[in-house]
Image 1 (cartoon, rainbow, N blue to C red):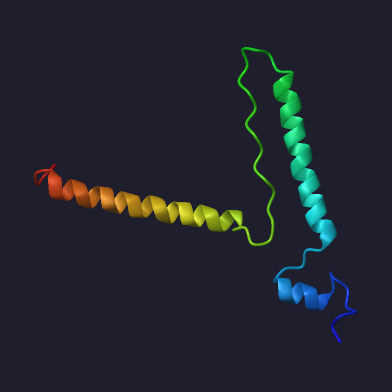
Image 2 (spheres, rainbow, N blue to C red):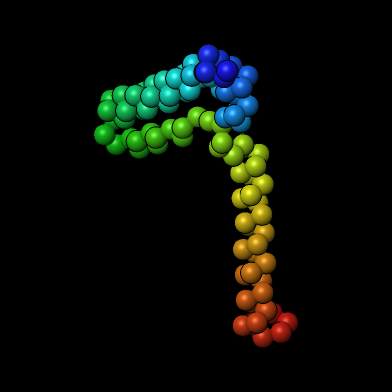
Amino acid sequence: MAEGLPPDGALARAAAGHHWTHLHWAAAESRDLLDMLLVAFVNAHRDEKAQPVPWPEPSWRPGDPLPKDTAAADEEKRATARTAYERINAQVLPPGR
C-alpha cells in the first residue's frame, strides 16, 4: 500500500525524521560547492603576500547540531576544563596561592 507514495511525502518525512526533500539536499550541496569554488577562485587570484581565505564550513543539514547547541556544549567543555585545572592547582600548589 505504501509503494505508490511519493518519496518526499508525509510518510517519508516522518520516517526520515526531517522535512527536507531532494531539492533541499541538492540546494545545500550546490551552495557548498559554489562557496568552495568562490574561495578557490579568490585564493588563486590573491596577492602573493596576502593570507589565503580559509575554506568555508559546510552549510547546516538535518542531523547536524544547531549553532546554539554547539555554543552551549563548548561553554560546558570550558567550564569542565576550568574546574579540572583548578582542582589540579589546589592539589599541587601550596595553600594560600
